[in-house]
Amino acid sequence: MLEVLSVGPMLSVQDQGRQGYRRSGVSPSGPMDPPSLALANRLCGNPDRAAALEFAVLGGKFRAERPLRIAVTGGDCDLRLGTTAVAVNETHRLEAGETLSIGALRGTAWGYLALSGGIDTPLVLGARATHLRFGLGGLEGRVLKPGDRLPLGPETGPGPLLRPAIPPAVATADTPIRLVLGPQDAHFAPEVLDLLTSEPFVVSAKRDRMAAVLDGPNLPAIGGHDIISDGAVPGAIQVPGSGKATVLMAECQTTGGYPKIATVISADLPRLAQFPTGTAFRFAVVDRNTAEQAARAQATALQALLDGLQVKPGGTLTSEYLLSRDLVGGIYDPEAVIPQKP
Image (cartoon, rainbow, N blue to C red; front, side, top):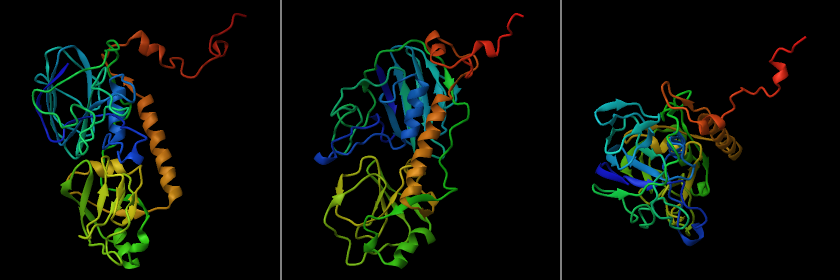
């Protein structure tokens, strides 16, 4: 069991999310920053679909009943095992009864805590992800609170302590967030569409796992802001009657009755989700082909990051880990490297 001693905002159980239920009105939920969750799980030797904890800004304090490997990802923060400060984006050993403390994130909004064996709450519609709007999954479908006790999956062994060969990139607003116009961009005049790229936008405090309201230029729609409800996906930028751009996030509704002026591409949505409140940034319009290429490039880069994890100096090497690696560096012909007798 993992005992929750104190919590920050929006602490919940998340995995990759539940798929195949949009037709029933249930969105996948899942992490706000999927690459960070994937890294946390891989550092702990967990399957990709293992459940972990997601928190907003501040993590909290935890204690486990058994020794664990743990990793915190998503952004830099004060991370401590007992009183010892340790680094994020690395595997650490948490001893039974030892306190794990996760402080406030610096420069990002969402963090992840993975533990070896994963969080073993019951599957609901094929996933453990908490859907807070519907009260599904996780622990009773809600955010966690002090005193909660979370079941853990079976430990797979001591495992190695790992870290990335190159630290993962931190989400910044140095480059624009890319988007594809539509599907209802025809509801907006050309001069309004131009505002998307000619003016900055700011992440407002009106944000949660469902959506983020942006401060910036008003985006009036031709003929009003009501349309016949149609499909909505994470990344869609709805514009309600207020004229404020609203970016749908992981826990968004499956349909909506406001025009969607554009859609943030999937490769850039985690970065936008990670911007702290008050971050100013710009949009850039790209075509569908560019968006698809960016998605493939992101997937390739993430896989390289995960496959390139290295054992930390002093970290334990296990036979299982060694057998999983290509220890000969791509050399499969011994005669090519071993001198032959004359």
